[in-house]
Structure formats: structure tokens, C-alpha cells
Amino acid sequence: MTDGFHGPLLIIGGAEDKEGDCLILRRLIELSGGTDAKVAVITAATDEPAATGREYVEVFRDLGAREVTVVDVPDRAAADHPCLTADLLNATVVFFTGGDQLRITSCAGGTLFDRTIWDMHCRGVLIAGTSAGASVMSDTMIVAGDSDDAPKKCTTKMAPGLGLLKEVVIDQHFAQRGRVGRLLSALAQNPRVIGVGLDEDTAILVGSDLRFTVIGSQTVTVLDGSAIQHTNASESSPDDPLALSQVVMHILPSDYGYDLRGRQVLVP
Amino acid sequence: MTDGFHGPLLIIGGAEDKEGDCLILRRLIELSGGTDAKVAVITAATDEPAATGREYVEVFRDLGAREVTVVDVPDRAAADHPCLTADLLNATVVFFTGGDQLRITSCAGGTLFDRTIWDMHCRGVLIAGTSAGASVMSDTMIVAGDSDDAPKKCTTKMAPGLGLLKEVVIDQHFAQRGRVGRLLSALAQNPRVIGVGLDEDTAILVGSDLRFTVIGSQTVTVLDGSAIQHTNASESSPDDPLALSQVVMHILPSDYGYDLRGRQVLVP
Image (cartoon, rainbow over all chains, first blue to last red):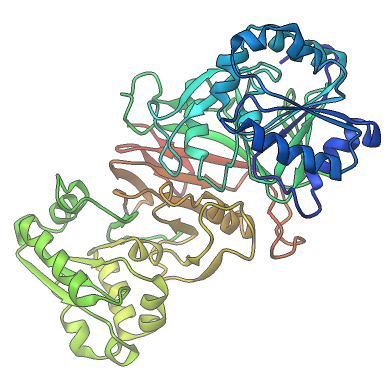
């Protein structure tokens, strides 16, 4: 876990409401200044940056944001160019859209853009992301894995993420795509990490104290592997189903919380 | 849990291999006498009893069974008729096919057929079932529920099953249909029960001592709610997502086992 002060993280499981009450995105605007909010929408994950950017510009303006800027990161040269990061520096919230998390990290990892995001996080700026933009928050992220499958080693691919949240592996569209198997697979490979599975239209707001609160219409699944007594992860073949005993699981709807450091559920 | 001697139960998560090694169905035949096996295939669950019956007759004959009889249970009058149960009495294994578990219990519950199955179980005869035929084994069974959804009270419908296995709720096609949410919903409503989620082509063989062993290509998920510290199951509205803390989860591939009475994983 990281120590010291950081800005909050708003990590969204994808498919957040953009037409009704917009509970999560409305909260995002409130947290980043309300009518003074300046949103930087990062479309690095998507191969349709123009359309995705336009959609969020409209939503955030409707929710009262003062400024909404779309920042695309087409390649590593752009990610290293001061022009691109200049668009970020005044933002009161950085929002990563969905798409493919590997596009974000392969394009931006180790660049000026990456360091700028980290600096803003340390300055207390809210960093938010949905779907691929959620996965990318953790130090190790799931980039691919079978949905609706028993946990297996080979089917879950992981890679280094942006590292804003340490010792956690995030998965999104969690119940809706049957992803408990692939999150368990990540956990089996290192039970030290906490698995956080975010349902669609559901988010966690993580504070500097590493406590989070759930916001949204569905649930967050927390998988705590610290009590695991047995796993065959090291000796099994890639295609073999995994064995895991004594995983502790919590299902948390809106207003419930979790202390990532103390590994405790926070009942509202 | 039941006490006293009973025959084994072979409970299969659906879609068991019928063309390759037929690991599970081969084991069924071995356990019920090998070349002396007399199989009663119960097609009560399916609305295509003729086709389903024919398929299993062919498979079990290929696996060396001496006799395979198809017993359909079209209505309650048939289920109460001694002719129908006469077809069962010489069987060394009773096998319930897939279909709809509610067809089995609504047709056969409380009839002569139902009592005959129970008597055979007490005499030590192997009782097996796949998919709907697996769900029906427990005292309370899941009859419907959303797949790939967060756990909610209203979406999981339960009903009394055949009661061959007490204080357990079984679900099938488990990982393949993303059913952890609906099994958690059952658990939230009474954490005393043990949730057993069977993947496709995967079975548990439950002995009279209430220990089971896993057979098959995928995994069995055990959800133990005895340590649950908090749930909102009673105060939440039917459509609200459930909260659950401290569910213990085990993922068990082939050869692993579980002691349902002692709530302990058995590592091979």
C-alpha cells in the first residue's frame, strides 16, 4: 500500500448511467469542484476517441462542469510531448474512458503523460476511470481473461498498470460478464493482493487513507486471499483448473465500504 | 445434515462429456456395478423425454451397462402408480437427466415415486443427476435466478427439492453461466446452508459420511456462509443488491474434496 497523501480515485466498473440520475458521474463533478469542475477526458484506451470524447463532453457539460477537454494519446511521441500534458495541468479531475487498458499503458507507460498523472494524483487531483480506465488504476492489471469460466492460470493475462492503487487487482463489468474466475486466478498467483470486482454502473471512491465507499446501482465484490490455506497455482499446468481454499469474499452495495489496509468491511 | 447410512450421490453440473473419455458417466457405471449395472434414466425434468432418454441409453450401453431403462414421469398420477416404480426397483443406479427441476418436484413430490427414490437411497443405491437433476438433490433448490448478475433477493427463486442432501444448496452450469450471484443470494437468506456451485462436466460424489470428492474437467465452488458477519438480506427490498461480508469460498478441481459436516477442504 502507498503511504502519504494522495488525491481520491473514482474507479468505475463500466456502463455507468449517462442518461438517468447519473449518480456516479454527478458525484465525479461534485468531487472536482461542481460548477468549477474542469474535466480532462482521456480517450487513450479507445479506438474511437472522437465519438467517445464527444459523448463524455456532453454528459459532463450537462452535469454542470465548467470546462471539459478531451485529451487523446495516439502514440508514445504524443504522450511525451509537453503540449499534451499542458491540456491536463489545469484539470480538477482526470477521467479515463473505457476501451483497452493495454492501449493506455503501452502508449503512456513511462512517458511525461504518465508522470503528469502521478504528479496530479500526489497534488490531490481526483483521478477517475471507467472499465479499461478502472483496470489501469492498479499496479498489476488484468488485460484479458475468459469470462464465465472456472479459474485457470493461462486464461488470465496480467500486465503492469498505472500503479495509482497498490496491491489491488481490479476487474470491471464483474457480475455482468461472470468474471469471478479470472479475478480468483489473479489472486491465486499472489494472495497478497486484494481482488476488487466492480459491477457495471458501480464505482468505488478510494480515499488517501485507502478506505473506499461504494457508489452505484450494483455491487462490488472484494476477494481477500490473505487467509488462503492451499492453492495449486505454482504446480498446476496452465490449462488446469485452479484449486483455492479459504478465500474470503465480501459483496458490497452502495454506501458500504472497505478498508484496503485493514482488510475490513465498513458497514454504513 | 442427515445421519445414518445412505447410498452415494453423484451430482453433476450439466454438460458432462458423453463422447470422449466420459469420465463422470464412466465412473457412474463403475460405481453401480460395471457390467452388472442396471441404470434407470429418469426423464422427469425434460420436455423431450424420448430424445433425452435415447441419448443416455446409448451412452450408458456404450459404457458397458447391462440394462438401461428409461422412466418418464409425465404427471402425478403416473408418479403414484406402482407400474412406474416397479421399473425402478431393480436399478443399481437412478440417474436424473437435465431439464427443469420444478418439473421433477411438482410432478413427483410426495408421490410413491418420491418415496421409492428415498427408500433406494437408504438401501445404498447410487442416486445421480445432472443439471436440473443435480439441483433437485438438495432440500432447498434454486429453480430460477438471473445469471451474470449481482446477488439480489428477488431474482433467485427457491423451492423444496428432493431432500437427499440436507443443508446444502446446489447450483449447476456454475462458472459457465456466471451463477455466483444467485448462489450468494441463497446463502444470504440463510447462511447455515452450504452453497455448492458445480461447473459443467464436473461432479461431486457425496458419501454417506457427507464428504465429497470432485470428478471432472472444471471446478466446484463451495460457499460457506457460517462466518458471515453482516448481511442486509432481511431489511433490503427485493430488487436491491445484497450486502454480505465474510463469505468463505473454496475452488476445488478434480480429486479435491470437502467435508460438508466439518466444513473443511480435503486436499488430495
